[in-house]
Image (cartoon, rainbow, N blue to C red):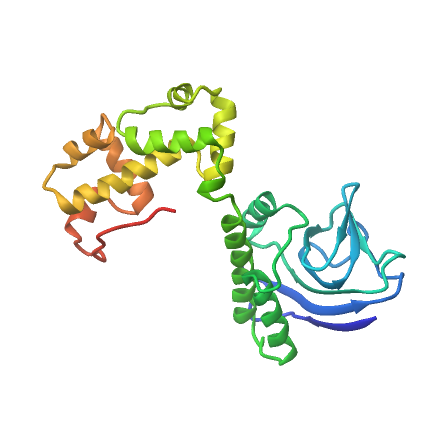
Length: 290
């Protein structure tokens, strides 16, 4: 077995809330003795991402067996119910991997798995794999020299996975006809639609099925999408008209200006009035919610 593994323990950030890089490596394994049981390891808690570049291995996750061939990776927690190994029929398994502590990154990790699954496929030139490779090269060249750099690497790698997962969602052209119809409706009737039941009724689906299908396709719940459109319209009105806050609230579908102000602040970060005047704020003509 060829091992090129670099471990990290930085005292400057060890007992802080910074992200903790544990190890990064590139390995070529050829012996059947290569076998890791996720419940027997002593180095957790950890998150592991591993990506195959040649040969293949196998991983059993909660009783479901997956062949990990070139272009496929896997994501697991340590400890958890999994086992990955070199099977008898594989002559070699070559891969890159990264291990890091779950500190402050649990929510994002769970969302990545929800988007990508446990054994996702990546192009070798995709941003997460390019970043993983560059991290390995930096480790090999002794360029990861403090906990702050290591922390930024963990965060950036997780964000690359997250971005890849978001971009892997189906494009508009792949949406079901009912969802395309619903989005058209929301973009046109945003000012009058008030409930999930009302929207679902328009396109003749149950509200539960419609809600799940809409979020799976667009990444937003239906009423979140309505709010997105309303806030975008409000920003345009604030910048291009002299309408009062009360008039804008009414035009975009809010019966209460105070509720509109509350929603606007939660999405934009400041009130409609503050946004309009630009006082003590960076002047923005447009904000894109995507």
